[in-house]
Image (cartoon, each protein chain N blue to C red):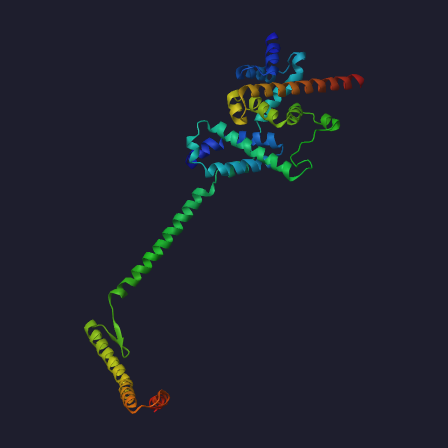
Length: 172
Length: 172
């Protein structure tokens, strides 16, 4: 793969790679660093990329593995909650979080890593189950199970939040 | 509306196809007013669309491909050709001088190689002669030593006296 091909094939994936890293690490700067690190690694091995059949799936898989390493390192380095550790918003912050999209984003961010990665690959990126299975190194069936669990958890939380809002309005 | 209910049930079980999921996204994002029972899920499908809009920071796309590579190529090319040109120029300037060999004899420039060679040979012979003449006394000493040794052997002198005599002779 020459630099022109690298530009067109890898650069077009940069947004997807960034979103995947951000979803996994839950930190914009860390995601940025991860994409930079990956792009440098891929650039060094660009000659081998010609042998890759599905460049998107291969690159996404490499990104996920790199992020998993980062998460592992963060856990090893400190027993205290890592910098990337996500803190659930308290009720006050939740009510402040007025935009709907932000609220859902927050709900997804609270899912376990595998579930939030899978739900975003499917519902945000619109990827096939087989591709997600390749990237996450699990079976297609396991992908479907995790996807279903993730969606159901979100549904429960949305419904309970709605119930809470309705109760508040009724009391008010 | 039954269609949407049906799709939503399948969606939460993880059984929808990508096309069906797109149908749901379409329903929730294009209709400003949806059925009350579906309203709770609107945020979910709106959020997916919003998340997909997130792009990698601009600086990142620059970092993805080492953009400075082509520039460095030209810098390298120019500097290398500059070095090559300098070397060629230096060789060209030195060339005519190398063709005209000459010698300096008694502060005079001699361009005739035959004369220079003869002169050098003459001088070398003179040096040889001088060395030979210089060594002559040493040869005489050697002959003298030999004669003394023979005469001492005949007269029966002890080794010690021979040595002292020898030293004396040499010193004289």
